[in-house]
Length: 207
Image (cartoon, rainbow, N blue to C red):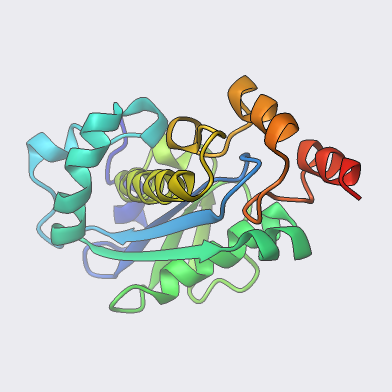
């Protein structure tokens, strides 16, 4: 389970240390969403902290229940990179852009950032440490992963109402058999990433 070891090593609670994670690198559709979380000085209630983990290991209903509490107790910043930005740059650069936007959206600039992954965004606005598997090690990164996951899932569910048939309310834009079949049957939407091979192949058929 994630704990506060990395935050303390970075200077918390005397310094503001943000955990940063992103969601949505792999999908065929939709933005990439990043979140930055600075935990409260007093820490999270123990019962709540025990529920926080890598968002992929937390049940959807638990993620949903944690979101309003995290938003209330923590400093939270959310950043996005659009489909257009993903296609113009690439998914890695777009993810880094979303992370920097998330850090800039915090109410107070952090002194340091713990970033999930093996590299730091080049334009990081503060000191940083890349943490491989960080959402399973750092409590603030894990909290950021939950906020980013719920935020993006809700956004894809809203988009599914505008573009029914792709199952985005269930697959969040990932390349499930349902989504790939719908892509072939219904074609591309403005929210599909044309730089991703399955979408590019389908888009080429319409030219």
